[in-house]
Length: 217
Image (cartoon, rainbow, N blue to C red; front, side, top):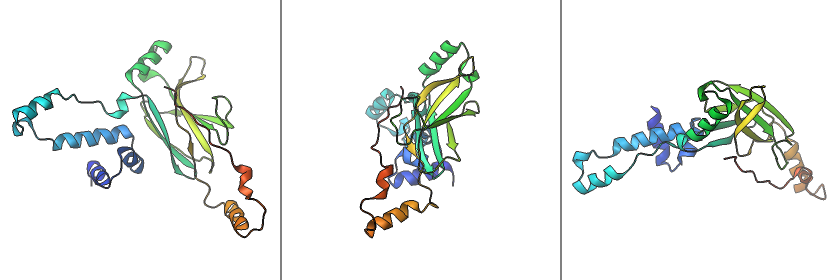
């Protein structure tokens, strides 16, 4: 079965394009491109339409896929030790980067910076730890592997300055790796609380209110 057939079947089940992209491990832009192409193929040709319908159709403008019309980076949960990130840049941000670095967009190094922001209000420089990854040219998605379970992460997509420093272009939403399925400490605490062996829930020591983050536009 080809990709478009898979997409159509999932769409018929009521999934959104973003949910389909996540399930198929594809970028949202690629899913939208295939879905739009499929819909265009299902649209009646001009000779099958009435003159009035043809006039309306001629006024409609084709819109660029999501991947090309918004500066965006999305970080999504995947497993207890991995996350999935995908991103897109508009022409305006590419041109600004080219002007700033006096280098063609295709020649700028692509770098992913990962921040561990578990239980903190992140200000850009106060992460528990950070690490950087060099990406292949023209990459628009990446699987982040070997992460610590039960932690919250944010990623920046950027490039490097002339002195090798990281330069942020876009920042993602926060996303969490799921708790380690082999770690039973949390389950043991719940059982003790259920059986009234302790006076208060022991997991309160790890509780923190959620903080709000905004993407850099």
